[in-house]
Image (cartoon, rainbow, N blue to C red):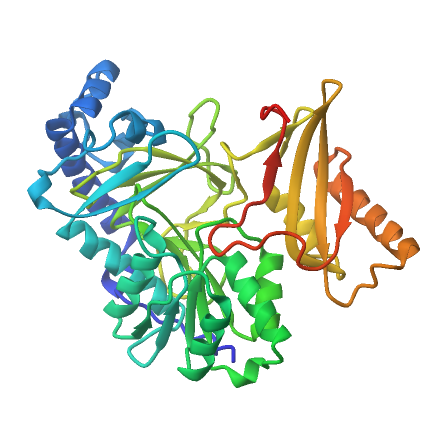
Length: 441
């Protein structure tokens, strides 16, 4: 039930603002944010002093390059309240993530911050065609993770009815989706794919559902995966981006053009830098995404290094928005695999596999070190209709996938074809990598 390409905009004043007017607004808000951070956060004040920069040195958005960076280690080193710029009595929410090692990271939200975040998600829901007539099923996890509450708040803001399913219990998800007439879905793209595949397996046809669109984020996904998902459910699958440290989902979102995510520039400034030299990069050049919050008062973040790899593009979109657009996340600098000196991102492998008719959307990258040499194995789960007893055909398929991967990565990888449902499913972010090089296995 895909929609006509009609562009709905939640806040035209801000989303379609004149570029020079927006630049002036950003400069004013940047100065206030720096003043707040310098006055209230000793750890960042110390860093600014070491860099020889004061709040009065920030007179426009162009001065942002004078400011020192922040990153996730700062949140862990100052856990729990060391980066808070507001008194605890003024904080109304804690959001955070567990991470993979060590202490969790937490971000404090004032009432203002929750309102700003809610509006950003409302803009995303609206861009996906959402309004007061919709029924939105939120299958992101609720809790410290910002996905569930963020989507819930944004959908409520536009007046939609929300079904707060959270993640898991797939059969119940589908039953509610069908019986309640859900029109929009919000969850991770990998879980959306799992839901779509299960819907097909249950014999439910797309036309039996009322889903017209969905906002999917919290993990990188490819254009090929979008096409696969849209074919399964015959709806519009939209990308949405955010992170706890900056403001949860809604920091950036796709419009119906589906060619990049609009960044809410009245609330954040985006930069792309070389992850090694830390120098700014021009439009269209892949690099590390850096964000500065402009309206966050609880835990402001200045030049926060996300470790996400993407590009930025300035210009007016066909939808009418004038905000800068970020491309899909192609990988992360801290999740990047280095195999025999070559940088490898899971999204590169995914792009290959989504072009293979027999391959499902589920795969795993397994890295080992044998005789001091890195070995990459790509485990590929096949679709239900593939004959697993036809060894000749399977060998040819594995060889074809191996050839295509080498053409993209310029290194060889072994390919292991697995039967359907053999790779564990995730109800949240999909686990794509098993790196055994430093685990002692």
